[in-house]
Length: 602
Image (cartoon, rainbow, N blue to C red):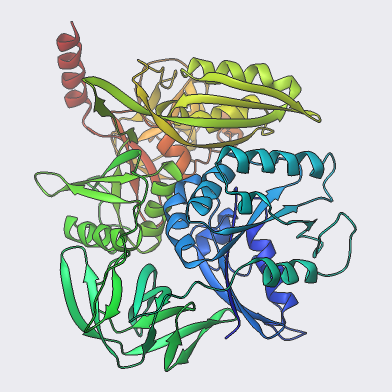
């Protein structure tokens, strides 16, 4: 069987999912008049809203009697764990690079993994229709990157294609055409056939799917032998071997799956009917069982405390509110989310969840919220290590592209957070800045950076190494306004308090004592009454319409709240509300704790 397995890798927003769209259209997966929309593979609600790929997905197309399995991967550094393991299913990679931005931090990371696995690369320089683009310079930068990552002679001799995914053309030169056939021909020519070893069945589970009818489905590439429907197999797990049977087999076809009776070595398939498997397990022949080396994924760098919702509004909004619900859901998540780890606290009421970054944890919280869970989450903390008796913390490489007039503001913001500048160069009208910064310094930086540069900065960062602890990093400068009592906020009260801070709530919203209502204009917290109603009298006053002059509330997304809160605050997350609050809701208790901490500090 003529077969190619290819993964598409790139930095976020360089056009991977758009390229997959074009491949699906070019190979007539859809009818001529079928409405498909854009970014077909991003079919999850969260992916569509955020415009990013979160989960890697498979599609299969047929071109010139050859089946091409295409794997679309996420570009965000926080989902690196997803990319690392799906590369095991591919024999070649298409490295997509933006013709203006060139290689970015995540490009380096995913390419390093692909080269280490010995995959054959094809470089595609996308978006050559952009103003200020520089395809030749980018090609040289990509070559330098390959060289720095110790690519082999064969890998350094990579073919390059140019084009524009949006306009639907790719060619082996800069001449625009009206199709992407040169790239598809390139895949057939340069990507090797799957390496097939002789011997009994071996297949590593590298990803999983879920169906409400079939349960958990194991997805992977058959390394050798043949897997058949109804076959007796051995599931090689970390702690032993389990005998089981294959119920059904599927291969990928177009956007979906097709049921088959057997799958040959080299093809990707989905296996139904295996219980209790984990990613990294090997499906082997029942008689001659050999395990493949397990998949290792980079360590998490950040953790957050997840707990039950203990606010006065507990249980009003969600279906799942107990710690048992929370435990079961987090355990289920660790099965498919390799870069996530969960530890239970002593009482079993709270869970320490380790992840790769704020976006990684934010997507998990957002998914749980939409499923009907209520929970509270604390401030994100970085994971420190003890190396040679000294405290070390994770550092990240931060890349910022920003218009020239804002460069000094960006440098000032990053250096205040203990960042060090490594590179500064001019790219057209933009300044390209590279820093090394503690992971702690990145928490809350995006919001400040976008404010300081009027939304013009493009930020990207990825984990580099553990280095000695850099000392204190200043947190939020301003305090907050905290609700004194429970009730509905009134326009009358908010109008009187507007000069004290910027509000996160509108008139008429239900609030409770200890909830964060607004950002104070000064340092220090202030307890306020926002539920006071206007006394009714017979007299009309000229100021009675003041309530209509209230500024609309500041809307905060979940990630912005996670970056905003301090150590004594947490976020209450329910299906319909995201509220910031103090961990200790009672004002007297809070004051006692503050006094005690001040005494200990002395």
